Image (cartoon, rainbow, N blue to C red; front, side, top):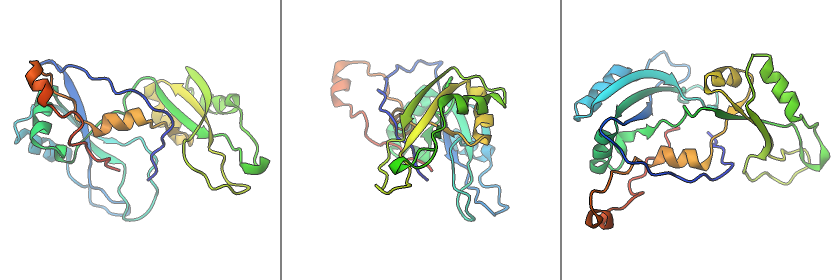
Length: 225
């Protein structure tokens, strides 16, 4: 599926203390039009425990992204597991592919969502103003914390009637994200979020010699959707 790139955010490095946690995920393996429930979340957690990782919580959640509806395609069901961050850093140091897991970055609060504003090339289409989409969100009781115009950052074929790529962007409370998705809005996925998904947390470097030998960014995690 398409990942929306709109703006580039800086990746901030954080030191991982003994009590820090990191939340990771992997698609559960469900397929659309298939009754198989995929990999059970507890089985996924047990596999990580067998690697010596401390699992603090494990649950089945829905990836808040727009996945095309097509028999045989994956469902958005994901096994989401919270671990000790130091354990995770040690695990990714030994396993550059991070065991197929990505970092769960979809709980940012507020959440940013978007909707195409209806404009089409050559002046076709009718623009939906920010207020129009804000009123749609209000029908579900969703508070708009901020709003702005933007573009989807994609290359669109220069043809009359094709999309201009213009979008209306809104910041809303993260708890209201499922309701917004039901209204046809999509989660705004930025380059910054993608970077955080692909890169395991870096281990703290106790001395300059180790820092010189480190290779931050190696073993990036592939996107899982």
